[in-house]
Length: 440
Image 1 (cartoon, one colour):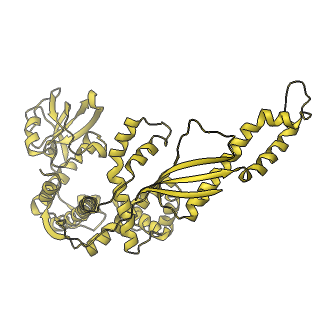
Image 2 (cartoon, one colour):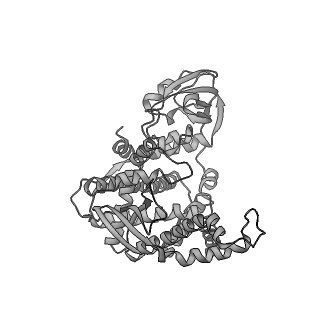
Image 3 (tube, one colour):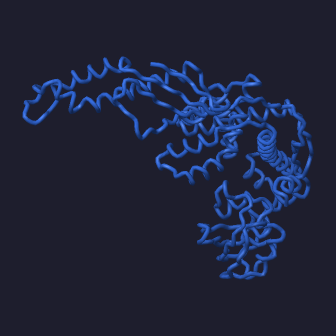
């Protein structure tokens, strides 16, 4: 068998395979002999059919099956031996006039190659690494919310700026229907006015755009998915079912122990310090996420390379349970191209920095995540045995392994960029961070 590659351009090639009779003759003969005792042809007993009749009835199908096996195996081994780094999988070129009886059979496969490129992690950039602080306004607001949350509910006839509203957000056209309790002051300042002076049974129609200072709150109160939350601009109705004010809880040791465990917080000053610590830990995660997204955008914009776009669009039509039309594949490619580009950049960055993701990295990351989750539910000192048992169960799920592996890679990328790109550090309040993140 003769196999060769024909280059079209830097990221597109064709593999040409010439198959001759000797490549499959022996296996076809073996299959014919195996078929002899089982063959059934009218006028002959089972197992007594002459070989020429068996070949006539079954030979063509057997020949095509064996040629396909030979070609598939040779193609797989050739790709491995040539160490081809492919995007997608080979696509057979269709030949409507293919002659299976020819002495030499030619098979052609289109392939798309991973592009060869370099990235400059130390390139000049205008990326900002935010240090988000919890200012007095935020801390005092959180103290008020704690007092309100643990205070005594007092029914009200008319809502005001400090009321809690129980009701249902709904929009049939957009698949929104969620009952929730929300404080009027949880809305953006502009939106709060629409929810004051209302009575039970009133319906407030609002736009999701600007409903909250942070769009992520749409996920909590309207149950909008994360993918669609940013920039969502649709009208929803909020039907008010109950209005309550609150008699604030007393800031005493009983409340402190209930919130944080016995003796861990003993005064208002301790409470504020704890709020500041917890808030800034959460803000640091959000700031890192923004930094990672900014890094992705910067690297995609500043790392230029070609992709085998037309090949990938054709390949997308062949994968998945539902076959895509050419138009659907075009849309899917446009949707996924940015992610594919960053996936390639990410791999190159890790390789250039000599970083490999090991199973120990995955176990350590999972262990830390589990300890953080347990701490949120009051289990601050779990044993190593307890944690490792949970880690083992989590990592037995392949979907979880994939999800967590992506998070480990993202964390490694963030560390690389912090080290090499030297982003500008800027200290801001949470309000300023939100404005920088969402332009509000």
